[in-house]
Image (cartoon, rainbow, N blue to C red):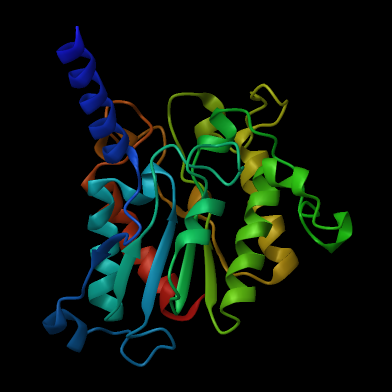
Length: 256
């Protein structure tokens, strides 16, 4: 019995250690030969350090297909702090709030919105959440918008010279709401996925944060998504990331 108990404790300890995010993040470096010939060499953000925060879409192994494009074209070092299951809400997994708290200082911070706040029915909130307008109410940190505003505030208070860029959520194809901006199909809070994406952009508009509207610029729809998505219709393949990577790199080069 004692041996079984020790074995169970060892398995639990190992699984707990495996589940903890790596504080150092996942690091990519540029191919210098590609960077030397990049059309973005004269751009504002060439040669900078980039940190990425998000859920599984930002950290899957396949996502390196996009982030390596950034690294190569922008001559950048890219470090990913994303954790599967994370959202902006403090109640959603290893949230982006926690990821930002543990990160080092970088030139550029990418807040990559996931689907998790919507899918798990965390309150969407509004652009006023966790701002001076509600007295930075800690209860607002439970909403998607409160989490976004927390991340922006925390980064800029710690590193005022930092550039923050926002990637909206990508489409997913398991439900009508996930892929259709005109869907009326809500989650348990009564909001559609498009409502969450609009709220993401509203928060960024309030603070003047540049936004890449991936939901509308991804170029993937009901006719072609099987070429770019895994069988779960939620996570992209390397081909999907290779498709969106050049668009992301162009946006990151100057922030527009």
